[in-house]
Image (cartoon, rainbow, N blue to C red):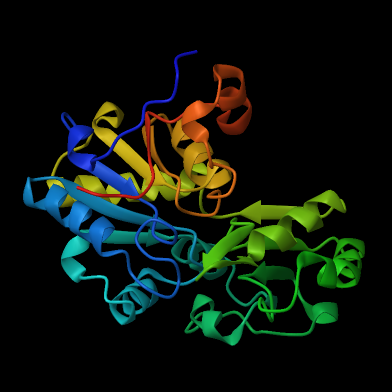
Length: 284
């Protein structure tokens, strides 16, 4: 195995690349503020004729994600389109009209079922569960849901996870996401279906949007994914068959201290399938 390749600038990596599939949270913003250099880098790639699809495990529809990006002052010209795990979850819900949902998640994620034929009911009346996050991600962890999940398992309910992330940054803190609850449910023997990275459907949707934007199918060897999570971004890109630029400023920042001194065996243990290159933060 070769040593990690470190890159200072995105422009040194995009020769022969037509499409960037960029993560949002941890790459473009940290939940509180946008990263201006990252936004400028994606915009510069577009100005050179490239296409940028933002690909996110946000448990909300793309239009809701865009509203959040605007509040954080991420310019619209940073990207061409957004695909979210929330969109894919809504597709599942709309495909099961009239079935009753027990919803786990904060009120801010209510767009996940808005306008759909999916009554929200207590757990003992539900046909399945949709998890978009924790009720209170400031104070709770997945363990707070153990008793509830054991009850759901006894009823053999399927849990639809609208955000496979375990944690994300919020400012300088890490908070738990829906993936933590869904993984616990699976450990307890329940059936969990995950929409979003690292699972293939979200990448297929992103490539459909890219092809529509470019008016032609894009070969995977002309695609570069960008992300900050080994579990979702790097694993998902590898599984889909595209290279990945790994941004180390995000959720793994503490693990990556002294990364440039790691031996190949340690790199293999940390990454599994090493990225095409690594950057501290995204810059043009």
